[in-house]
Image (tube, rainbow, N blue to C red):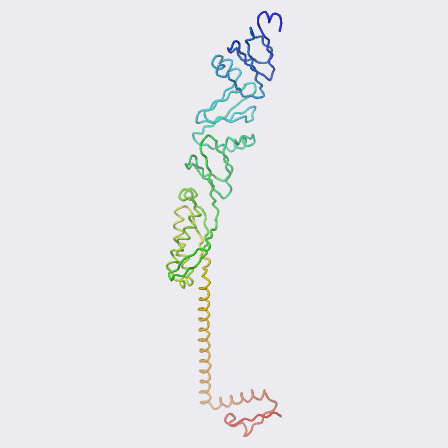
Length: 380
């Protein structure tokens, strides 16, 4: 400070290149000071200087409104202002790098000399979807907190709901949605073919026998929106449909009918299940009644029945064979009675068989009437 400055009541203020300063004299706005030395009035030390480091490029000051109201030209020369409406989002970039994202109805003032500054304004009245290229930039810039991200894998469909209202079905890939105070939900639905097992279901047959059955079904979702919107859980709905259909069908049959007509029962119940599930967007292909499990005492009884049936079948076969053998002998006797030559041949066959079992054979009275005489065998 020089003697002249003291006489004139001035103060010299030095502002560096990386600084800007707001000067107030007697509480009134003088302006914004750029780099260099400034001579400012300071009688009775009524000069106030508020310095701002451009390392923090955002302009945050209690005097912002006063500056724009009283010195709009000065504010416009030093500051850049970004604004969004209630249906807009702005991506603010500093030197081609994402600096921040402004949500709806927001304002941001930055030091112009801390730039260069650009902004991209997005209209969210048509949808909250973030462009794929911009989404990647936001993630790389660690600004993913401003968006809701969702990944839809191959073989899945992503159902997008905004504030509880369905908007669209998302294809496989990465998706982002602006966080603007609205509820965004992506419900993933598996479109691949799946298997469902209903194991150990107890049922009562028509003849009041308690059985347990195992049921299996293959299914896939063909209309994901209908499958999600119609029921709370479509896989649970299929589980219940299988239970109900088979319980109703098997309950109208006796145990013997179930064991004898398993395939028929399966098809009858399957038709009902397929029709019901088609109404909620689920295609059911193979349905199988895999196992019918009987109580221990019932298995014992059935085993006895089966054993008795097999024994009866064996007895029938044995009697049939005995009858056939007797009939064969009777036919042979008739042939020999009517044909003496055949009788002689049989006698010779018998003699041949006996001769093969002893060392010597003595035949008395010749071979005539061999079967009518007594044949004496004597071992030598």
